[in-house]
Image (cartoon, rainbow over the protein chains, first blue to last red):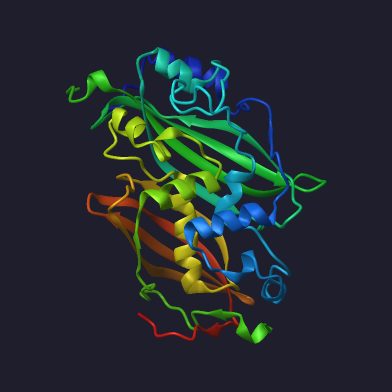
Length: 188
Length: 152
């Protein structure tokens, strides 16, 4: 079902973006901190004591309080500009249009569906860690025919670092389907 | 508390089921998760915005889904456990008014010195189908005590 040949759009996008950072590195506006951890564990009703109980956490492998691992992405989330966020389709800030998603939008692949997330943790974050992240395009699939229409699976890898020597603490691989809703049901 | 209170699931083998977690999702929970993860996308707190985009309701953001997966596994694995990897495939949205049911099963274990590396298959489902399915890798200290509660 894939259209392997003469897919100029895909070739152009790969040539332009593959492996290159998507914008400058993101730096967390705050160090890993207890108030944000507390908000998180209350939101998920997560009562694992290593996130807030210093005495118990000290007796574990972690040697002290650590942040919930799934918060990894939270620390470097951009500070949002709430005014106009709905008009921007929910994007928290103006984004540089020089990116593969915008190019796919412009080519008619307007639909977006998140399909996969993989989080890898090398060490848990501790209060005081300042997290940075860099995101790079990992792949764009061949054009596929899906139940939502024709489209491309686009995969990014975000690498998270912390500490003075930019130790890698985790990675996220994130995949979306960019599809053309007008081609839904097209037989190929 | 002392090290003796660092509990875990005790002996673990492939085929073991994790205790089921059932979360009666509300609008409040979905918004709380979105804001705690600093995700201000309106689809995660604004019902009108979400439905105008074709979703059945406002829906849980992916960070919150991963947060709940982590909680589901460490509720079982205990505070001595370290999550190594959460890999999920995303399905139907998690929406208010539909209970989200978490089930999990140990699919593999591997002893590695003082650690036991455990692979858990997880499934999060609501009335519409699977919200997320995937695999969690979690490392347990080999010496952890059984949890003081009945196995399910």
